[in-house]
Image 1: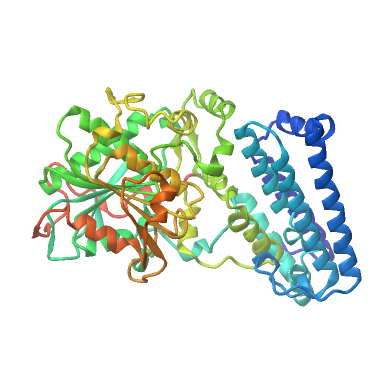
Image 2: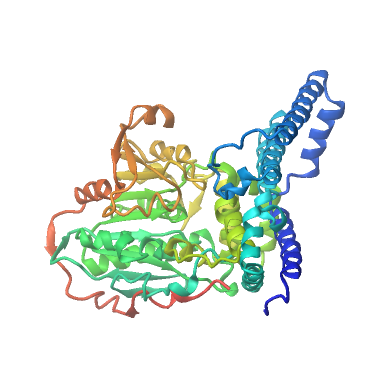
Length: 571
């Protein structure tokens, strides 16, 4: 795309494009349903006297606050101190009355919308959905998101003679072609070159996964191997980014013979693969290969996010078939009880699930990019509008960041599996009910696993609320240790021990509830990785010589890691 001939023209194009981006984002939000807004409108205009009075007071305060704001701006009141909100970090937001008024007026409007959502007397799910959409709308129309109302954008355009606007349009055109917002310099990374580089070998594969066995980094290794099952909606290398923050490398250097499942971007023709197929092909078959290669009767297992949900289902199936060849279970940011899934629940209602079941009655896939966009909307200021402002309005190049490179590299999910997961986990919460689900011909009872478990949640997780993750303790039994990490769903997990950042909490289980547990928990500085490694070492047997080569006669080496599957793009 060529640069616009002059900055006013570029400004107009970018303004129109910015409005289109906002409109597109809002169109993708969960439908609140006309009934939700109609019910709210009735309460405002024709509800009970108490309801009408609540709205009258809210409206009165709204107009009073706007009048005071206008008076303060005209009266030349001293500017407010520097803003803690990064969107309004430029000095003009405080120093220039026009922009200060835009910011504060927007805040009053956003607060009015939030208060409006609070007075709505709707059923719980509809009220949650309404609150979410009102908050998203308010954030979307922030004055920082538009070139004509963002002083830093105007200043950069003037200083660069319009070049920043031209670059922004070029960035926008490129993102429209690829169908997603660029969050990082993707040219800075390449799978197998500077991410997913821990040495290893593909030792087994089927239509949904490749199994990587990592090369030992120590002369002696622990007797029991470790199998890691990452989420199948993402590529595995979130746990093997760069050497300094690779969880896999940490495991290998601690002497664990480590294997990981690398999920395939399944093609549309495999879209009828089910949850049961993934239990069998993605957990049971890899586990059999691990035990065979290591000559072990038991293995330790670890699942991350939905990979942990799948792993727990598989172990429950195995427990019904005979002695469970597993020593322990680790769950990272995983839900087994879906009673409260936070904001993501606004997307999953009965109508949406039934539509997904109709859509995927024929072979098809849920594209990883669509899932990534949904998760990004849960933290839109950080994962959407920040990049709209920097990439498009300011014309800046996104910096290189390995975690965001991985975030953009999603994996396709079979449509049938996706619809099953939505209904039976998110909508109906069946997994927590013993025997309510079946897999591989066996009823699923998580209580039958009966192995020591380490359950790690993170306190700011926007996908797996830590209080809900805590419910896994009651499902897995008394030999479960619950640990709470700082930060969010990914950054709280990828918290390298070598940097010793953040902190974590440990406590005593069972506890009456999550808050009681936290009230009595002890806080520790640094990463939870070291704490977990000590826990696992106590369940990994003695030392033995490191294996001289990967695989064995039954499962010979296929190709070097990271393998073919991880390089496939979701498209």
